Image (tube, rainbow over all chains, first blue to last red):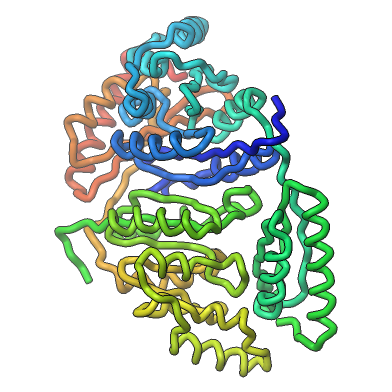
Amino acid sequence: MTDAAKVHTAAMLAIGDELLSGRTKDRNIAHLAQVLTLAGLDLREVRIVPDVEDEIVSALDALRKRYDFVFTSGGIGPTHDDITADAIGKAFGLPVEPHPEAERLLASYYEGRSLPFTEARQRMTRMPRGSTLIDNPVSVAPGFRIGNVFVMAGVPGIFTAMLDNVLPTLPTGPVMTSLAIACPVGEGDIGGPLGQIQKRHPETAIGSYPKFDGHRYTTELVVRSRSEAARDAAATDIRAMIEESTTAGARPA
Amino acid sequence: MTDAAKVHTAAMLAIGDELLSGRTKDRNIAHLAQVLTLAGLDLREVRIVPDVEDEIVSALDALRKRYDFVFTSGGIGPTHDDITADAIGKAFGLPVEPHPEAERLLASYYEGRSLPFTEARQRMTRMPRGSTLIDNPVSVAPGFRIGNVFVMAGVPGIFTAMLDNVLPTLPTGPVMTSLAIACPVGEGDIGGPLGQIQKRHPETAIGSYPKFDGHRYTTELVVRSRSEAARDAAATDIRAMIEESTTAGARPA
């Protein structure tokens, strides 16, 4: 699907005590951000919450009502701390029950491996009524979509694979393209004129990122826009500003 | 300060378009999580928002009212996209103005380097009235504390250094200690009994983390508690459960 007019918004909800205790470094947020940006969707907010039902419910409710799509990670495994499906059912006011297709998939998977389809494993088939499955090519137990919410695993390899399966079903928008310009002086030397350039080019978002190599400061300037013409016009002004600031006697530092 | 009774809660607000576009991978969240956990503070929630004033204000208001402390990263440099100080002033209903001590520090720093104290650089002295400074040993421009909010830089080296300066001023609590137990079978084999063990040991939080080496599943079980006795009692039950599940014919997979 392509809809050149509308830019869809998205949020992420990362679920898990281990992300907040420092035991696990999240790797899914940056991946989702990159993938959505390339697809022309706007990731607008991320929240990380613990494995506590009320916290998941209230964060999910805030995000799903405000943004076009919400992507969650974590909490869909077979153990007692995997409570994402129940929390999402509660947020939507839907009963959570075994999904017949998920049951078939997992029963057949465990049968093929001569493993018992334990009560714990059966937990992974529980989803809010009306969910559709998200394929898991890594370890079979599926994620699910309910409404505008995509519920995926926290293990990065599985999250990535599930996201690959979700992406083709999303409406893409005009892609945000960016252009990086190395600036040989520090932010303090160009902050004033750069702010003026931002004002003159409202269709762009100009980011300024300081770099320090231990001796001197330089700046990386990034112009982002959904219009290539707007992006290039701002870039032209930025290059002229850099030219001026370096020839006018401002010292790199 | 040590207060053995109370565990203080904390939240983090990471600010920056670049974190949501995938351009920059956040490195501060995991660092803060580890440092706070070691200090006995509970990081309960993290939000990432873009460089948009209303978004920063509303996220900050939600977090500062709910948790004992809030730590922010990003948006305190000299350029137009650095709007954190203004947003925080707005959230607290305080005027934002040059902080005299920050002015002295920066004026002297730039004078020493024969650099002009430009309007852009002067932006870095602006803080909500009543703020106290957070030392920046890396690049001088300070962070600040206002109320229960600690406002720090987004550049990881500076964030880390500022956090080191903040930590001794925080009340520490009973430290959460954790114990990891390798379990040679998959989550699906132990999910049921593990849930029972969690119920019997309410003073602990037992996390279950699947591992997959490409061939077989194993599980890392992590028992966390502020009481070492409670932690060890749960660990004893977990080891007995593993012993039973591996001798009872359950197959590792």
